[in-house]
Image (cartoon, rainbow, N blue to C red; front, side):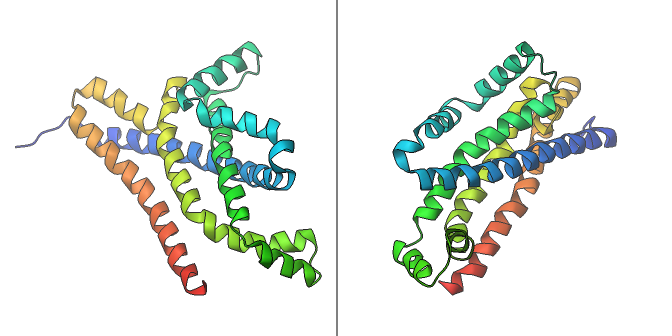
Length: 217
């Protein structure tokens, strides 16, 4: 007969860790998406050479492993005496990490819009802003959505690395329980199930939006 020392309070502890995971992910995805849209439009408008400094900085965040970024970011903010809490440091680094990938998603989405469509819109009297708002944005969003959903799910899972900064998110909470209860398989199975429950609605939302938009191709 299966027996476990896991109590209801332990489940609440895991739920609190899951809440922290969602908070970090939400902030990182929201801020990273906003920055990614701005940087993506800049990269497209400025061209390859003029956007080279921005591209170089973003390539650093795409190339260096996230764990190293978190550790270095935490060290630099301590050296600079910014006094950031682990939550703030985690959100800032994850936001920049997300923005680095989202920039390329946005740029690729804009470039996927046929130039003839944009020229036709401008010939009808639309300004640059009107062209971006009414023509480019809807078409680019449809193209970029699958990649953005994948990025969001990746950030949700990568947020587990913030445990190295002392933040008690879902994975860190499960490690604490494993150390105390010595039931690694059962607790990690619960942790994995919670990650699935957090990820599944996001994936299904992406699938729903893709199906809803597909008849208008």
